[in-house]
Structures are given as C-alpha cells and as structure tokens.
Length: 315
Image (tube, rainbow, N blue to C red; front, top):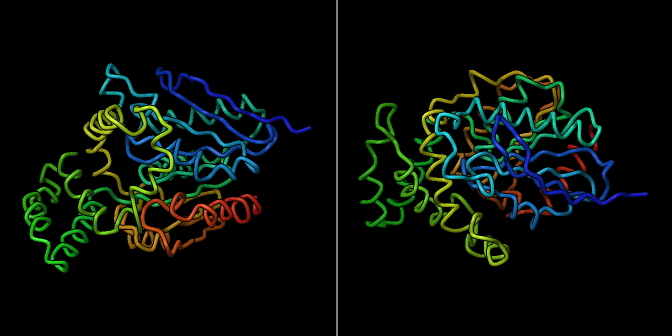
C-alpha cells in the first residue's frame, strides 16, 4: 500500500537548522534532492507548483539552503557562507535523507548556483548518488558573468536602448578579475538581461504570478531580497573563483546537463563547453528549445518527462 509523504522539518546541517520539505506519493519512491539557485533564491514554491508530477515517481526533497527562504536569519555567521560549507551541508542532508527513508542513494539535481554545488559534490562524493542533473549549469563564475554581461550589452546596442547602454557601460569595468564586481552590479545587469529574454524566454511576471500570490514574503518579497543580498555578499568571491573545468571534470555516476536554448544567465555556450570535457560513465546533453534559464518552470512537462522517462528509467 502506498504511503503518501508530506514532511516539513528543520534539519541541523553544519550546525544550522535549515528548512526541508519532502513530498511524494509513496515513501518507497527513490529520493530526489533539489539544490536551488541563487544563492539566496529559494525555489521550493516554483518546483512544487510546476513540477509536482515528479512526486508521483520520486520522493522529492526541497531544501532552503542556509541564508535562503525559511532558512534565512539575520544572525547566520557570515564566515559560514562559503561554497565549501554548502557542499558539506548538502552532503549532510543526503546522509540524513538516506537514513530517514532507508535508501542507499539519492538523485541529485542542481539548478544554476545549485548546479555548482551539485557538480562539485557529485564529483567528490558519488557513493550516495544515482546520478547528477545539472540544470542551467554554472561552470566558471567570472567567465559566466563576463559572457552574460557581454550578451546584455550587445542586445542593448542592437536595440539602440540608450538607457540600457548607459547603465551597463557604467559597470563595465567591474567585469574584470580585479574589478570588484558586486551584487548591486549584478542586479543592474540581470534586470536588463531579463528584459532582453536571457532569463525567461517569455513573460517573467506570468511565470512567477502563478505562485507568488499564495506565498509568504520570505520567498518573493522583502525577506527574499535580504536573503539574496546577504548570500551574494558572502558567496560572490567563491562564485567568481569557481571553475568546474578544474575542479569537477570526472564523475563516477551518470551526468545529465540540461540547457536552455536562450539561457544567458548561465550562458548556454559555457555549459556545452563543460559538457564536452566531462568524463562520466554516461553523459547526456538535453536542449530545451523554448526556455532560457528557468527550464523546469518554462517547459515543465518536458522537464518532468526527462526526469522520469530518462534519468529515473536508466537507474
């Protein structure tokens, strides 16, 4: 007899209590841990709204990482906000999940920033993983931001948008290794990137409006902004220094890289370059032609089918 799981719990990870939601139609289904993007941008409500079909096949674990969503608090030690700590937190959560549900392994899915954490964890600690799915794969922080900025400026020039050109030229010097790029600079660039279709290939507001009215403000509101400012402020140096070409090229498990054709948040061309150098027993590149950076929510039916009909079926 199937046993529906609907469990929300605070789990102690790296000495900090963090919010975890586990949902699934059957407690015996294989575990799927989702590492959200950002940093500081908890996507739990988006995944539960757009990708609920996954709960028929997986026991889906949603985690608000330290400093994000319901795991944000103003007194989190800034020194604990490091890429290495997030990898350690994820490893502890996998240990907790496998013990709690008496399973040996989990499927690991990382989106955007979460794909950086996930790729490093999957390369270093594959023993408890069935497979890794990198969605909007973040490869190399500085190259990522330079490519995203260059696309945005190029599009502004093509459209002769003087306001965008002026705003982007004002932060151009930041996009060098010693330029001192900040979260405030990224806010400027990402705002124009969104308007030029590099984040969502369609109506961004419509995508979020499906869920935003039902949520408390820690997910989409003032607290979310505070969480992102805090998280980026602490983690941006680690992100900019990250380069998976050096640190996570070899995997002992299947790797699936999911790329949005129009993604210029984590530019698609960098994900393809990374895919080409990955060494894994199985590796597959999957294009989402109608998506930019938010593939799970822009093309949810196709995304859910990829997870169930390909990733799960080949376990």
